[in-house]
Amino acid sequence: MDIEYRPFWGLFCALLQFVLELVLNLRFLAVTMKKNMSSQQGKLTYYCLLVLLIWLPIPLASNRPWAWGLMNIACFLILFSTCVISSAQVKNTLYKFKIPLTLLAIFITWSALQILPLPISVIEIISPKAANLFADVNKDFATVSVDPAQSTILLLKTLAYSSIFVCTLVLCNSVKRIQVALFFIIGSGLFQAMYGALEVLLGFQHSLFFEIPNRGVATGTFVYKNHYANYLMLCLSIGVGFLVSTLLNQKERTRSRQRLRNLLETLLHGKALVRIALAIMVIALVMSHSRMGNTSFFVAMTVVGLASLTLIKTRSRGLTILIISMFVIDMFILSAWFGLDKVKERLEQTTLTQETRDEVVRDSIPLLLDFPLTGSGLGSYYSIFPNYKGEDINLFYDHAHNDYLQFTIEAGIPATICLFTIAFLAIIACIKAIRVRRNNLLRGVAFGAAMAIIGMSIHMTMDFPLQAPANAALFMFILALAFQANNKDIRN
Image (tube, rainbow, N blue to C red; front, side, top):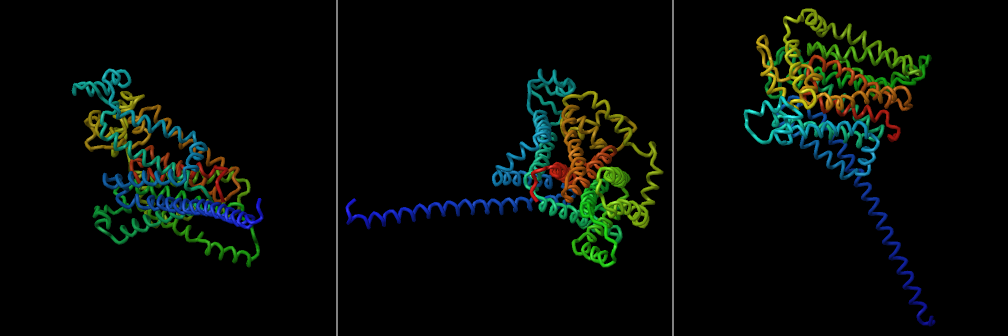
């Protein structure tokens, strides 16, 4: 190269190197900013999910068309945001939890097929009873559901609950986020408990929310006391699980100075506040005078507590004391002051002649026999049961007061098995987490989730807690936490 061009060539190379470094730095900066922005947006979506869970019980458990319509829209928006912002995590979640998500997808698919118009000849083959009901309409096409309008509403609700389940698996991906979620649930239960108890103690004639008449029992922002009691049971279970997590593997100390230090740490870290919140929730639960609500909570606590004393080999003395104190303090002292005697009296006075729920179950059995495989359609119990009820039932029943029976009637036996298998798998995940996990918070989450699942399983035998959107949404959230408790890849 000519000597006179060498300075220009060196300048050109230096300028090219500068441009290349600038482009690489800008690209790195753009990727970093995009990653940080995605992280912030994911955090915002996560908090939107938690705020939604607190909001759902406030408008009468979201058991009104406008309220569950808002719930559906919010759930779909949160799911959409999660898929856009955390697409890689969504793919990993779908693969990691493929069994429960596949079962849920099967149930959703069948629910959608129930409202799909099919030739009447096909309906006659797969659901002869539905074909007979549509025979008078004289149409060429019909649906498996005998009430497709209600089935459409329930399908949208199911999609909303499924969105909460998926978003919880994706967004609650660290121990810290799970801990914050526990505090949100405990806070929601505390608000409902304080509001419900104060309504009764102050003698309010009408609820402050929507002017619902107060019948002298705690109902919070709910209308139906049993739905209110079930919601408190779920929140109590999570609260007990959190307390258990603080006592696992806790070293025993005997010196008075160390005991004082432990007491101060307990107060500063909020354990005492959580214990007080649980006491208030127990008071409100008993003041609801819900027989199955109280029974399901105390039975679930007994079963899971005794099982955990066997499963947890490195338990501390504090854990044993906590489980015993839940029985002694909550049941025999607090409950005695705030109405356990009334609940006991109602249980003793309840007879088959006073209740008509057994007649409802009796008259619902023919419904199950008429729609064993395909079901009558989600939400159709409301419209079809009056054709089956006997003359000795004078009240109007829009639910079977037994969620197992109602789900089987409306969805059919195969789809119902798929749905409830998810809860069974969640229980197995909880047992594994309690036995083998080293992280105390995740073991506590497994303890609380197991309590919630068992309590819900008991309550469903005599009532319909999953028909309340707020309760169903929170239960799906807890089921997702149960699977996350056994997730080995969860971040600290």
